[in-house]
Amino acid sequence: MALQRRLYAKEDPFAKGTSVDPIFLLLLLLLLGLGLTMLYSASSAQSMYDTGYQISTRYFQKQGVCALIGLAAMWALSRFPYNFFKTSAWYLYGLSIALLLLVLVAGQSVNGAKRWINIAGLQFQPSEIAKFTLIVLFARLTRLYGASAREFRYGVLGFGAALLGILVPLALEKHLSAIMLMGLVAVVMMYVAGTKPGWILAGIASAVAFVLVYITFMGYAGDRVSAWLHPEQDPGDTGYQILQSLYAIGSGGVFGLGLGRSRQKYLYLPFQYNDYIFAIICEELGLVGAVGIIALFAGLILRGYWIALHAPDRFSTVFCAGLVTLIAAQTVLNLCVVTNLLPSTGIALPFFSYGGTALAVNLGEMGIVLGISRYRDQAKRQEEPL
Image (cartoon, rainbow, N blue to C red; front, side, top):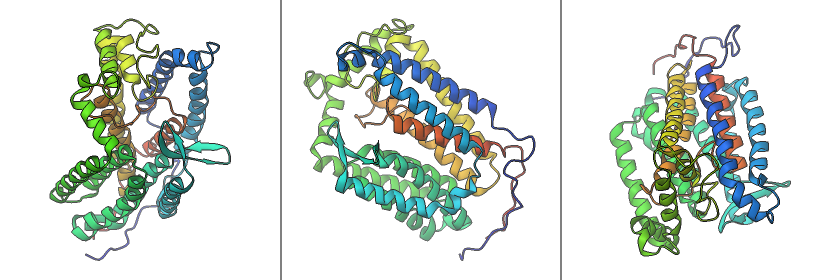
């Protein structure tokens, strides 16, 4: 079906009396505050060790600065017209691909992974930017395709080609965790856009086959699967991290050992302040605290989808849903890894794990969701049928 131009009512991005959604904002700030608190607790021992037992706040200070930057970005983007991203989607997409390719040429290795670049003294992972731009582009394509997204030409080939433009450079980087994450987000956005479920299921089957082949030929990924299935067979090497994580979770019991009283954070559990911070949460706050934090994440995600449903037009609905899905997918994958329900993926827990780029980007993205929430009381704009 030929694509047709659709008309929108005149927009008033900051109509008098509009404000951001208070429930979403409260949940977000609660998670950020708890995240910084638990980061300090989880990283204090590592910080003392890394600074010759001089400073216990090394990682907390860096994360705090990035949190302030992220909050400033969140505030600014909550007042920024979201239609800017619709008009600049293709430019952002091209920039992301260029940065991903730059990693292959001039990337820097951190913990054995070459996924970082340094521009003007600023070190960051282009994959963090690529996640955002993929969501922007998918929302833009949804606005363009309209009801045509049900057709194979647009709903599968169109979205699929855009996805491959990002995934191919990531595959060359051997960045499997980012590939998995973007694939999950793309599936949800394609479903919201109107792609037929049958084609989505076929795409999922193909993705699973790709992952199996990828693991077969990439030795390090195969080692992770072996450690996941049988960590007890190599407790001193490949199975060490997951066993220490499970020890931390189990020792917390129902009510935990108390804030700051983790034993595993004293250099027993690797990356205790990063990918595996949830294990420290379980150890210090117990089952009750862990369930409470999961409930806050669930509330934030559900409220985010509610905002998406009440967004004023097709682009903002899919855009918001994609941003919320990104947080949801990261959270679920991280919790599954820490509890050994999935092999190690290297995906951080949003708002909790150490990583300044990720925290600032996540807060900025939530600022866009808050900006879209300003329209929640407005009627849906009418679109011409295709």
